[in-house]
Length: 175
Image (cartoon, rainbow, N blue to C red; front, side, top):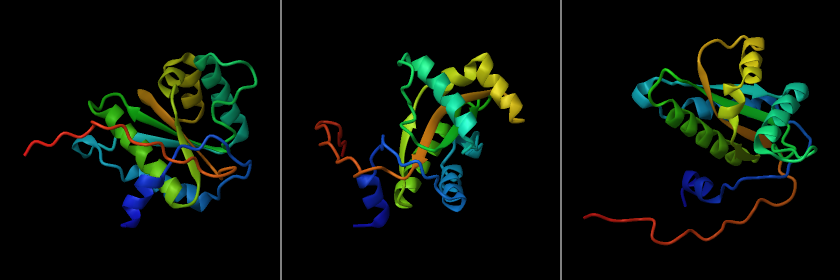
């Protein structure tokens, strides 16, 4: 089978990570794959904020936990040491789709490079908040951005999850 198709069929969301940080070169490759995602009208409306700083990672994790309504101590980033935060320019009519494709490309790239990943939601709520906007200002990121998702990345702890059977009746041919 073609290696790209094999990667698509075997990638799974990982929810348990080792503490070790992926090396910078590997993260750069994952991010580059995200930046090469298709985008509406070629506008390239999404950006990636790479968070490897534990203090900021934990701040985002706590914001996410509160939005999700989980008990104190729960980590919605499942211990992943790196968070690739995808934001998209709200002025682009296709920004949510552009950011989603960026996320998908990065998750596939992480798998191809031997790392685990998972899409974590609630980025929109985080960066619609005053605290989220303050974080962007602290980082020197200007503009009107919508949080699309957190691509958590790291070395999986344990075996990758097995695929579940695909639901039938999801393909319709019109010939």
